[in-house]
Amino acid sequence: MYEIQGRNTLEINQKSFVNRYSNQIKSTFDGCLSEEAINEIGKTSGFIERVRKLSAFEFTNALTFSVNNQANTSLPDIAADLNKEFEIDVSKEALHKKFTPQAVTFMEELLKLQIANQIDLSIDDKLKQHFNSIKIKDSSKFSLPSIYNGDYPSFNNFSKKNGVMNLQYEYDLVSGKWTSLELTNIKTNDKKSSRETAHLLEKGDLYIRDLGYISASYLNAIKEAEAYFLNRLPPQAGLYNSAGEPLTWKGIDQKFRKTDAQALDMDMEIFNNHRLKCRVVLFRVNDEEYKSRLKQAENSAKSRKVGVSKDHKIRCRYNAFITNVGRDVLSMGDIKKTYQLRWQIELVFKTWKSFFSINKVKKVKKERLECQLLARLLWVLINWHLFQLTNHYVKNSSPGKGVSILKFFKRCNNFSYTLRLVILKKMNLKRWLTEEFLPLIENTECEAKGSKPTSYQILNSFLTH
Image 1 (cartoon, one colour):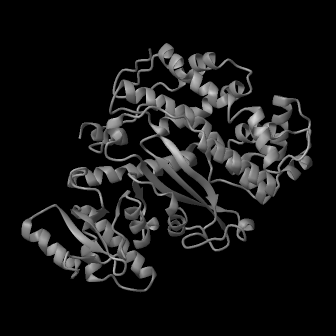
Image 2 (cartoon, rainbow, N blue to C red; image 1 turned 90 degrees about the vertical axis):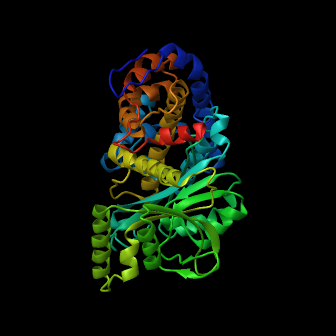
Image 3 (cartoon, rainbow, N blue to C red; image 1 turned 90 degrees about the horizontal axis):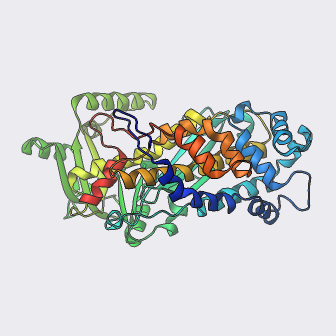
């Protein structure tokens, strides 16, 4: 048993973990990550039309495990890796020709297969008594060299000359599974993504999304699906009382001052058109936060050569949340804590940037860029399987605790090569778990920062609510 003294204690019994999860890991590696499965997708996607020197499995394996940083990986690097691991002699010119639209389709299909075949783990029924799932969706954009501007055009704060990659992803906090993960351009913006995926909304799920995804049609679609939402109030959404009369922030501020309240929970209607009835929960921010927001608003207005309205200045004093979740499930105090769960998905992209340099790319053939980025996402998903199992073990043995995403993935690069050996059946899985994996994930417990609870503590509160 590993026991680290102090705040970071993470106890994992080797024998218990191996006995409990080795068959599930083996099933994943022998299933959707097997040579047979990957080669079959290579055929059905049109990537491999006949027997070649380089198989779909070998192509995928080399990209997934040799491309630690796309910006620093050359074709000779990949060729050298293929020669070392598979004794395949392939020129950089031949490799260059392998990056085709069919290769991109193949990698996309492979990623979808991994998402569809994520490990099913037992979930405490108490966690699902309120919501079937808690789905958090976000997008991250990063700059590309100017040669990609035609396929991945720029916008807003990015240089007009550069291209921009848009990564859309959704994660279910209850099951620990990714529900979507895709590379797009900015034509598929957040609001468009909400429209195009409205048919996927499921009854009983709680959806937490950034402001960019929120519109009246999206929120009404959630209500029609008998699902739930928790979001910040969009700036463009008007506020109306139960009689349909418009409310001003000046009037709301006066109500706070009269009652000396720090928070209010009211039933209102929002949006000028397509009125929506919901709870509006308001929290007054401290003076330091208010000054920071006001300065940001003034700087933004100055750049657009406009002024800041009195109403907007007052609004800067408040955090405003909207939800259709009942007060018996989420109290006013629970609203802010539950919304903090959205930070988990922001943390994920921070992890990808910090440790995998997914946002650093160089000028290469477009299809090669896409294949290498998809390979990095595939690598993340393979390791996410292991994160899920480790987290499941810790949460079951110590309710309210869990594994830090940042700490865990920081260690992943350290066992990446030996993990590859396991997938290639060159190393015994149980030996790898005992000698390589478990020792490296010591001391990866998620810690609370100050008074802010961890996502695991928030989720555990649902069990005791």
